[in-house]
Image (cartoon, rainbow, N blue to C red; front, side, top):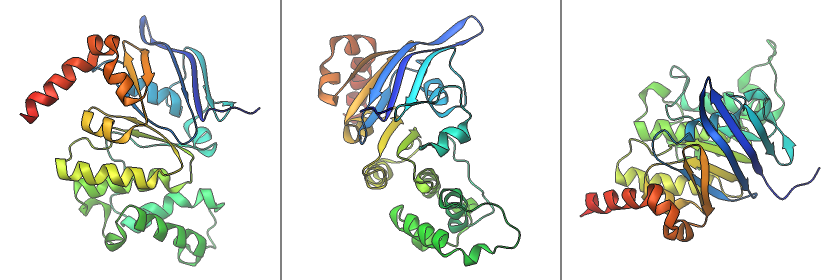
Length: 258
């Protein structure tokens, strides 16, 4: 089956008991697009990411990855079909080095499986790929540092490195710049652009500066529904979005900058 979409959601719904969190979400993302998902707290953004990545199964509806239906599949099965995700809280092997964290992530994608007679140091393809990723995320000079000793921004960069290490074509980043200073955020936006070049990106983000600086398109999620999906300029001018969410957020952002 062929499709023009990298990721497609068709009337996706998710209920927990009697509470319907996702209420018929529809979204169609083309290959190579960078999409930011925004919305008020409680809109269902994290739940939507959990549905796409397989952590939750939808109550109804369909999710397609490059034309193949993935809803109900386990996270590792979805990952092996080309989708990878980071989380709001970094989940690293804290007692392993930066290099070892990345190498763990590249092994499966290169066809390496557990074998007690193999030495990791001898796996030239895995080591070379790890070095390439370390350069991409600007941590090559920190390769031997234990993950527990990284700064917050460095730990987030390592998280992204792990996310892209398997070579997935669709990347999900959950609030990648949360907790960063303005200067760190600016550098991180460029890092995300660099490492996701040619890939399809979906990111949940609250910082409107990041959203408008990074996204090709914005999906606005309100009460579990995608009420708008368009270019940043079109979303900014959308009256329904202004009323439901964006107007108050932009006003707060402008007041804070004043």
